[in-house]
Image (cartoon, rainbow, N blue to C red; front, side, top):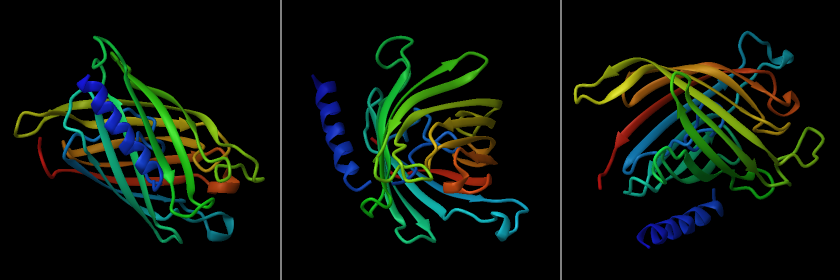
Amino acid sequence: MKTFRVLGVSMVLLVLFAGIAYATPSTTYWTPATTDIQPFGVLHLGVDNYFTVFRKADNGGGSFPTDLGLTIGVLPFEKIQMEIGVDLLEASDYPLYFNAKLGTPENSIFNGSPAINVGIFNVGTKTDVTNQNIVHFMAGKTIPVIGRLFAGYYIGNKNVLVDKNGDKENTGFMVGLDHGFIPAKDKSGNEYNKLVLAADYASGKNAIGGGGVGLYYFFTKDISLLTGPVWFNEEAINGKWKWTIQLDINLPVFSK
């Protein structure tokens, strides 16, 4: 019964955030095709940049607004976890966005069970302009030798998540993969990988359709830099392919 009460409270929080929530939750690369959730009390600071490379402005050169994001884990439980977040995208007309995600890690339901979560992102503050209201359902599993695989489904606001002609394009699937190399330990004995290969893809000829592949370098267990190219399913919406550089920092701010 305790588990169901926790789940019920968490779902209420998730719904409340849906009313105000756009931003990047925990992601693999370009999409939230991952079942990762920020640990309780750990604040994640992310700075994401996307820009064209060696391309003049009259030939499609440009960049997305810089995304400064804060995400934190808010449930002090092992089997049910939740994160909430806020992003500031500048320069843009409506820069403030929010997100939330609730889920369970691998092996929490039964031995060998996949990680499962539900979340919402890209719910902006301007009605029918930035409030994509994308709800996503994800499952993930660690496969020996291959790495972690993720797959799921998304559905968003049909008035905002559209194709280049303005027609509804608000559903699709997302897949992701990450694989770590070069095991290391910090001074406290915590294990991590110095390099992580990451790739993901979202279907749909809309604002989130596309994907890419890149490489994380971990300076420490809690500080990493990701870089690589991103391609889009619909250039009329997102423009030419872009290069991304993403700085990620985890900061414990409170404990159980």
